[in-house]
Image 1: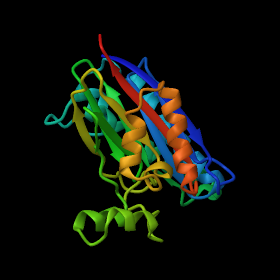
Image 2: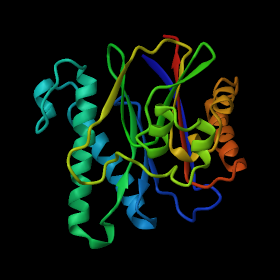
Image 3: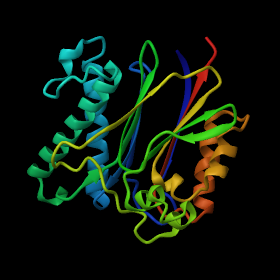
Image 4: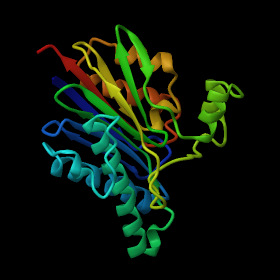
Length: 255
């Protein structure tokens, strides 16, 4: 599978630091966006530890069999890529726990993580938290991941609209993350990418500010992928830029 990609990150207009981290490892077929939480230093550390741990595990298990998900059980009902992502995320959670045990200043830190891992037969999304993965197919934008956040749970239950969720004071309350506690449940979604499709990985500095329709229109643009990333970040900052913004765009190219 041939992919083109571009990524941009921006602190936004109200934050003095950027707690987001990302990874673009075309050699591994791995693309990750993580949004750290816990304050200036701690959030940066949590997202960085997660991204570094995930890419190291994926690199070490490249070409490996099912036994390489140890110490986590292999789940035969899902793909090898999904198993590798689940194990990588859970290992990242344990590494965050280790970092907090070593430094009292880091206690309480956490991070979201959303990843795409491309394999020989397809691709897989791994996800925890409220960063998102979208797919643009034939001009239609679909959110692939479900936010693990209080407001999105209300939206899915039908008790809150999406527009109200973007303005709600609890919109940043995450119900599941890599936080160093018990191994979290990791969502996975299998993909069968086709030439011409685009995928967007982003932190909630974009998705929490810019409406779905605007994201769709920008992502479908004919510009270079770098320019599309710039336009997405500009849209978030035009909406107030209340949080760090990271956007990673993948395009499936014709072989």
